[in-house]
Length: 68
Image (cartoon, rainbow, N blue to C red; front, side):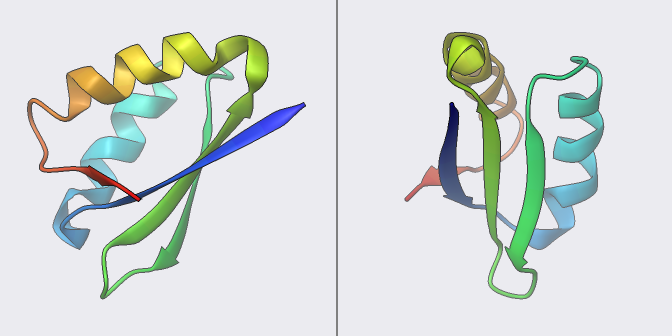
């Protein structure tokens, strides 16, 4: 079962966030929904949701993220 979480961040941060997420093999898939608006989503398997939350929390110390 997949879970989806949506966030908003400055679009200039997308590449940095994608690189950080890709460092964790098979953790999540990042999809940009509205580039100019800074809207994107992360999808992961439910079994990885805690790890994803930890990684997002860590990323949010470097990038201003708002979960929607």
